[in-house]
Amino acid sequence: MIRRLTFIFLFILLAVSLPAQPPTIPASNIQFTFVGCNEFIATWNNGNGSNRVVFVRESSSFSDTPVQSEFYTDNSVFGKGESIKNDTLHYCVYNGTGSTVRVTGLKNLTIYFVAVFEYNNGSGNSSYLTSTFPTKDTITKNIVADFTLTPTSQCINGNITTFKNKSYCDLSPLSFTWQFGDGDSSNFNEPKHTYKTPGKKKITLISKGPGCYNYITLNDTINTHPKAAFDLDPNYLPRNKGVQCLLSNKFNFNNKTTMLVDIGGVPRINYKWYIEPDALPFANGYKAELTFTTQGTKTIKLVSLASNGCGDSTYRTYNVILGGMDISKVNISPKSMYLKDNQFTFTNNSAGFVKNKWYLRKKNETTNFDSVFGKNVVYSFKQAGWYFVSTSNDSSNNCIDTFMQLVEVKNDPGLLNESKIQSISIYPNPSKNGIFYIKNLPNNSSLSIYNIIGKEVLKSEPKHSNSEINLTQFGAGTYILCLWNDGRKFDYRLVVLKP
Image (cartoon, rainbow, N blue to C red; front, side, top):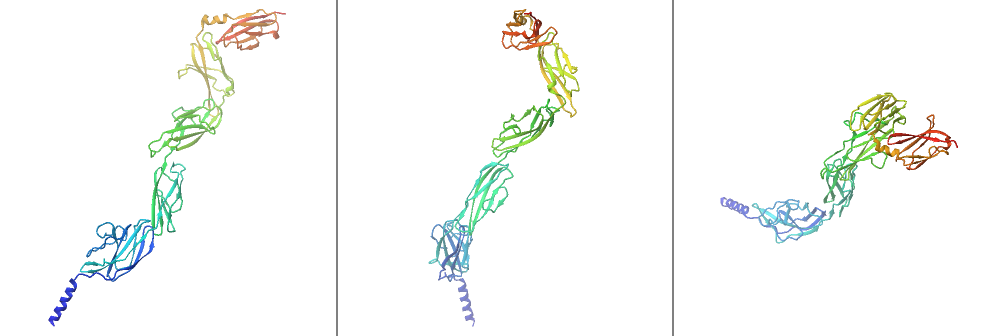
């Protein structure tokens, strides 16, 4: 009895310690139940092994078989599993007892070879059937992700990017995922997109079909633009307001355009100023000022255009109003006189004239040196030079009208200049027929003829140095010829005899 038990124990121990024998019947009938662009599903009929391993090779048929006693770690993602001999060619995609495997991570439009090896396990060792094994190949389907975008560079303000999908696949249906590079996405076939911030945008299109996947990335450039802005410069003048008077208006504009740093650096900005609806600008450059010659509502437009081609515009409206001064009734005469015996007349017959005050200052100075009251004032300057003569008025609408005229007080010419007047000849004098001839008139002379009671009967501005005066229609008598030249007056006595 003891001998029998000992024999049985030795037999079991021997059986356990013996290595496993390789299977005798290989797997068969490999089939591809699905082939996509990046995956396939393979099935087979099992042999008589307790387990089996499946290897896949890209582009070429099998050149190696499993190493006896080696255990292979599988991964259904091609290239992730263990290779047969660390050759990075044959990758284990399945190790188990089943008869199907789904392999992913494949390239599209590529041939792949599949082989199934039966094996038995014994004492932790794998015994493979390598003398015969089934193998089969398949070519994956094709998918191409492709698109175009219009435009490829644009300005942030008003930007719209249009995408043209050019993807195709051997299998359908196709689905798409657009990633616009700003956190937004879309599943439309051909979307449109507006960017909220400037910069280079990386757009990715992911195209998917049954077992198919591909993507492509293109760039879109969104340029920044100026933010046009302006107002009236408060530091220019206290009256630089939105409502100004016609006679004294001057609008000085304060440019407040801003610009974000562009992806290519800080671009140069050009500025153009317009009075709407004028087609041509009244000023170019960062700053501008403008005086209007008519009353009413005025619309100013600033166009700020950056060197990257992106621009912006903005508008502001101002009012020019009438005050109480009628400019047609304001006059300063003459505009030029010699210092000796100079007398300038300042006249303001405007109905709205309230202050009745005139201010005088030298041309190159900023403060007044004198002032006089009156609607009609005769004023004599004490020194030769250029002078501003002005008057202003506060109207009921708080409009300050200002009238200003530049006059000249010249140094007296002396006898040298008077000699050209003394060279004048008037003949015949007296005249029997009332016609007088004048020679050697100085340039820019003006003539006035007065009768004996001081009434002006004739006025002339001869255009030639030799001229004619015809008093025939005024009859016989004595007349005074007043000659004005360079601000000085010279008188001559003319006599018309009875015929």
